[in-house]
Image (cartoon, rainbow, N blue to C red; front, side, top):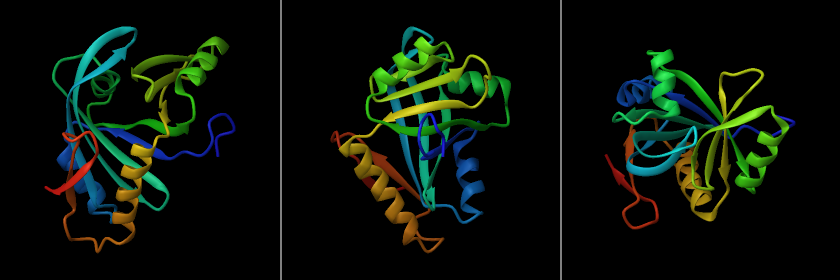
Length: 182
């Protein structure tokens, strides 16, 4: 367990092809995956306000959530930056729950040991170490909505037969996650 952040709850992989990445994990028995296509998300990247587009898919292996992310469009993000440096993709971040993302970001930046690279409001913040850059830290606000979605994904993994509906879609159009077959 990280002494600074608590237990790792997610491994985040940035990939050039999300379908190939899901097949990779599915072949290893990790699934099912829950896929979402996010368009026009407000973000701040290195201090600049932007709209991002990406596909993200989530599955569980035990207590570890596996996330695969494929950046889309031309907006510069930490994901597109990662792929430029690692065209084959790979582990880009480790995520931790956080009760107060803004306060934790402020404290980490004030310490001089981390700098904020990308954020989605007060719910998700990606930081990189100023001393040892590399795999980033994602702080995620623990909310009822996130807990509910993660519980759906974890429960599906626990009861999954390894074949049925390996990819399912998350639809946020109703402001709450709705799961549909892909």
